[in-house]
Length: 394
Figure: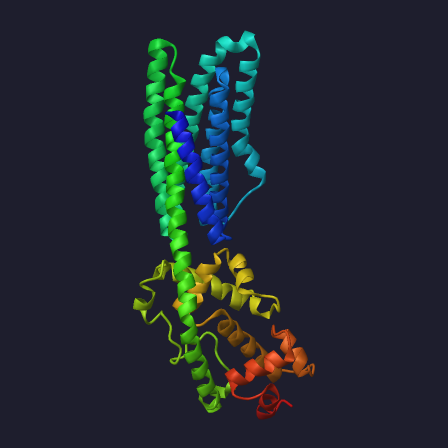
């Protein structure tokens, strides 16, 4: 029975990790989830080896269930606060290694073998108490902080797993204590089977989350492909606007004001109905984006890219791509160039240090003068030199 559960656990973790490798998410929550999957697979493999080794080492892998609570603790923290404290890792994870070492000592010394049943009772009860405690904390903490939630599915799955763990652990603890009081011993096979089945259910929950993320990733890739024709139409629109520069007030664009000519999903909710992200998630992501552009001014970094920005925002690349293409209605380059050109206009208007056009280009985040001139003319309808003459700066 246990062997079949462990084999199923290995297969499911391998499948889930394969899906995760295709997504390549940079989110801290996803990385912790992946770490849990790797740990669960190693534990299952170690458990199989222990079982086939036989003797008193059959339940050698059980103490590592004490790490399941800490994994949930860090998963909840990363999702809400995006924090990971390396120093606290030892506090949360060291009990499992202490119990494992104690299990080894009790088995190695024949004089201590008589204490093995008592040790098993304490070990199983400690595991159930630990998993219950962390799950209760996760439910209470998550309920108090869910106003910052940007991934409803992750919250639902974490809450479901917490409720499942609490129910199973509570019932198992009561049964364990009852058996110990009545017979002075318990059958460790029963409780180890319960724990490995619980691990299988938790990995299945992680599998559900990864499948959801993978579907969102595929949809994003399809959106990027189909976006090509829309971008061509957008470029023609930009060229049309460029031929009528008078339509841009004072020849300066306001990056905080939406143009009526830009198709944005803020006014067309039906457009993102097929997206894996809902409107509230888009709004949270856009708020993060505004912070990095308006406050941090990441667009001034010459080496900024979609991948780098996604990592800074703690988002997956495909979610950030959806934010630009599906919700905002512009791709990454169009969006960042608006900010850069707006910033360069300010430099040209107040060019007290008499910067050259090339210096203005690099200060605005462009890698070359040629690229700066091209994008400036596309957006402003004139070259930077002509702009300075119009403004009477030159």
